[in-house]
Length: 128
Image (cartoon, rainbow, N blue to C red; front, side, top):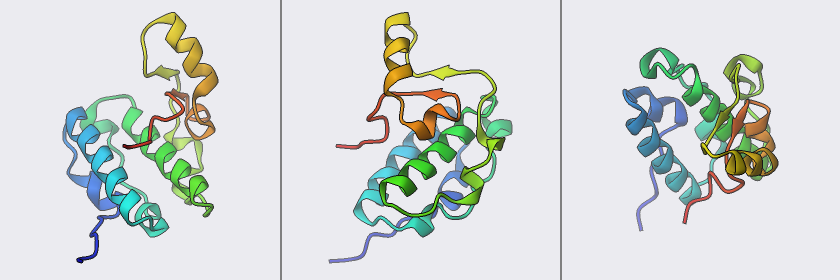
């Protein structure tokens, strides 16, 4: 059996050019990380994507929340780049539009996302 080769987050997201690319890369990264969970994969800071994606920092905040969530889940230190406020959104972002779902997301969002003003489902990073 061959070893799983997982690109570090910094390298994996360097080729992202669109929001669709970001979504695909995030799912791929999570799948590969699940197969070979190594904290070194999110240790180095990925380049900021706000200028590329023109998304007001959404992807950047999402990567920081993802790194923090993975670190906490695997009981390792959250990397410094993911701890600061530089990758937090100024205004809240919700993964749903309806008022009822937004209220649910306010309650259920993992801490790593809430502190960055991201409101997602409790299982947003869980992959089948």
